Image 1 (tube, one colour):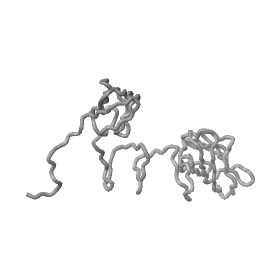
Image 2 (cartoon, rainbow, N blue to C red; image 1 turned 180 degrees about the horizontal axis):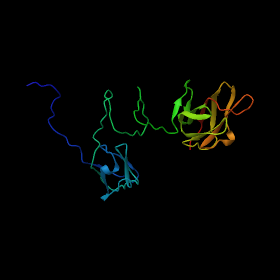
Image 3 (cartoon, rainbow, N blue to C red; image 1 turned 180 degrees about the vertical axis):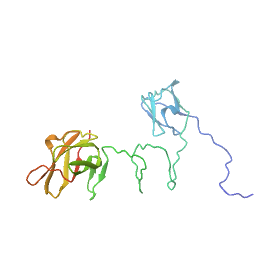
Length: 246
């Protein structure tokens, strides 16, 4: 009767359970007949003495058995390798099927050809870089980010923090003086900062600046003044700072 498929086998073949080699006193590497996954997957005997895995020998690339010292050149096959476990094959995920997992670790590079989306918190290291707009160089993402910003409004002599990042509080001091306290400190007082402002009650404010002498790792004082140098609160003051956090 006809059938569809490959011709049925007429016998079964069992893989060899052991391999024999002959030492010559100088050769240390031998090729196994079956691939194994670790040093402990084989039992090795030289001149009747069981060898210690990972000490007397090691297996690399699955099939290369390498001895620490070359086995002796006793007559006949004096090296016996017994296969305890074998690497039969590997399983590859189909390239056109979606992969779902709760966690994963990559020991080498990973390339994403489409859109890479992260729904949870994504932590990047200080070595994360982005390619420049022109493509000629890269820039460090972490160092390039603003580490703090603040938007402060003033009405009737009262300063109000409208929006901020990495700030715990502002302290309204004398006229034209505001202290900004960071939530996470900078590594030192050597960070870059800039202030911006809008006029208050029609007055022409010409300057908003930070006191570099008062800059500390955890805070900075901002000042604002009109054209004649009189300290005056601005109606709308902004702060941004760049540098390395502690």
